[in-house]
Length: 317
Image (cartoon, rainbow, N blue to C red; front, side, top):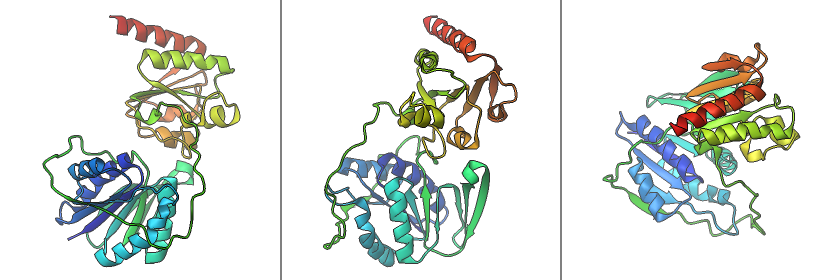
């Protein structure tokens, strides 16, 4: 029987990893333990999404979440999990590295796929900025793998009849680090990861006022606006929360419409899982056309207003 763990400081990512964990233990009849930062209600929901045992690891006001590492090491030494999936957030990556060092076990980062046969695991991850895919074979356990949010899909219907056990994991008595102050980074209220349609803005927009064309189209189609890295970090036309790419947001919308984006591999990594990719660019040799399902060769100042008008008319009918 297999014993799998998932650890996440983001509850939604935990639900997604639980679906994969259940798949991995389905043949062996093993158990899945979820360590997550959440409430009692969210713990019960984690059980409905596939956990057999949930241990809450809440983020203390004056203590970093990673201070749970010694407790997790002790738990792992007792329970001997085969695979530990960790959400690849900033906190999760730090925790995963520390945990692997203490347990002297392999750690594979940013995994896209995982297969496990009881004696061997095959994992795929992106390398060279998303330009290539690497397959890693592991036959030493426990194995730690970090997984970015939205890599896997949670169960479409949660099973509220599932039964499980919920407990709280206590921090160690002696803590090494104390948080003096927390300052939340200002964020927009919209999370583009949840948008069904995203209109991407790139360097093809000649000035900041042109971004309004993308905003009008997104509004007409019930979506949100994202952008390539230069638009957010160099020109500051849009907030960094809307930057899509390997070091920004990784999105999975129903439709991604890229306007004036050349298609560097770093950006393509962030939109590669979109169900449908539509591209508008006046350069008929733009690299992003290679990943497009549909594309329009044309001036975005002409094409976007035409698409907006068509969307508004369709909505009116």
